[in-house]
Length: 98
Image (cartoon, rainbow, N blue to C red):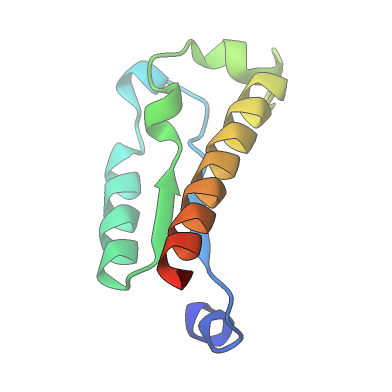
């Protein structure tokens, strides 16, 4: 996918959400690290959201007490993170174009 997008002059990135359980002792940390390493080896931009939520109480990030999907707090943080990343990339591209 990255190669195809680059051929079209587009960029590709991967943003990984954690599973919002046991954030204080996250059971899938090794998987996040493995993915980060793999994306780095392939020069794919990777944003791991785990670090932004690891100090949070997991059930405060759920949409409902019985549904562990991310709530509006998570989505706001993710939107801010993605917007910040895109702004930084756009600024870098403008500097290179000068």
